[in-house]
Image 1 (cartoon, rainbow, N blue to C red):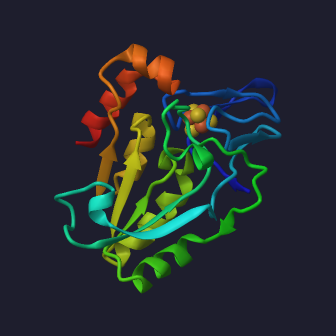
Image 2 (image 1 turned 180 degrees about the vertical axis):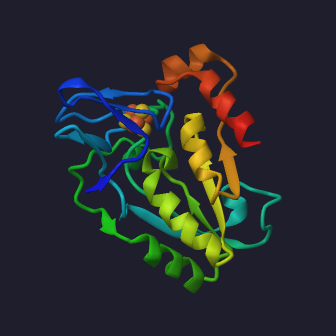
Length: 206
Ligand code: SF4
């Protein structure tokens, strides 16, 4: 498995992840709220690196982006897991899936860029589930994609820390945030998160 970025080692093989605003403290053998970042022996691993469950070539307007590479196609891919648990999620069958699921397929960052170019797409979009929790993988693929002049798109809930977002800045060209409500109560009750970190990340991305 691929070692995660953005975490801190604590005492007794416990770690603290600082990728998203949950900032999970994770004991050995356990995983974060997202279900895909796992502590093994005091090292945090990104268990879904290079593991894809859904891919498609979509119009960029489906992301939906209206003023970014209009009229082009976007090679879109996602995996399992999410740092939210929204009661109304339309992709719940992948976002709330567990790592035991058998139908994930391997796709390296290099292969992803090749697929995007072969499909005639002008960009790569990480979508369908929350890309934040996949961090190391889109970061690697997006860095390669920019060298090939492909655009790079996050379709995200915006629940990422400043450290996480700043790491993406070198490669990300579009950050499309769902602001699901302006009520913190809604975020807490329906999504399992908080409003303010979403607003902070959105402002920082801008
Ligand atoms: S990405 Fe977020 S939910 Fe997942 S382990 Fe890190 S802090 Fe927790």
